Image (cartoon, rainbow, N blue to C red; front, side, top):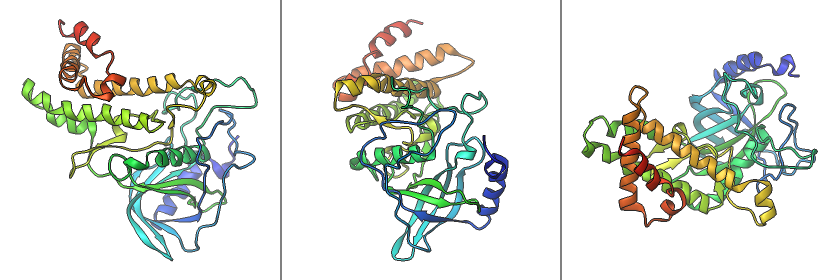
Length: 337
């Protein structure tokens, strides 16, 4: 049971008080193993990993993150997200960065419908002493660090540049919180940008959003090929870079491997279920772009027209062969409507 020192209400009060100082102290620099955490923790009584499978060197005294903007904060958030600058006495500052602080007292309660609960556990673990719940600050910071390291070829282009994991003292009590730091991603969210391109009802204008959605599918496939299943593909985690026009994915705290070294591990961790989860999230994203709650016919027609375009122009591309295998069936089923 959570004590009053860690109650969400008191933590929020301390959070607001801390934000008035506009800085967060960095106390330690966690160094996680290069592999994905093989086991989670108990869902309803999550505890720290024992023995601790990573090192915790101290940060240089005087290391702070100076806040310029609060992006996502408050109760019911998996992380408190801030934009600002990391200042370390012996190194150049890291400007325009994003610090994600995993403050567990403010996490959404598991199983409560009013909050975004974590995805259902995918791994199948027969050993009762090994759990698969991965939504603690410790595990989310480890998973995100692992994912960004796997995605090194995409950093600074299609995913943010990753600067590492941290422990921070935020709320003026004895608690320290895991955090991760990456570059800020500018631009409009994918659904907002695509919606701008479908303002006109003519097919000519609708086709302008097709290449952007194609880029979302293609980047998902590239991420899978680099060994990562995202598990959190949604409109708030995808932006269009205003200068390059690139699609950029961010937020990999739920990520898991898209492949394992042995068939036994792949079966235990249900690789296909993880990949299908990403595919389902792509469907939901497409619905958000094409959807109209007052006109289901318009949604089905828009989706089918995009898929018809993809079949004609993208069927030779690797992403289509991996993620577009149902497009032809859906086009045949939906266009006659």
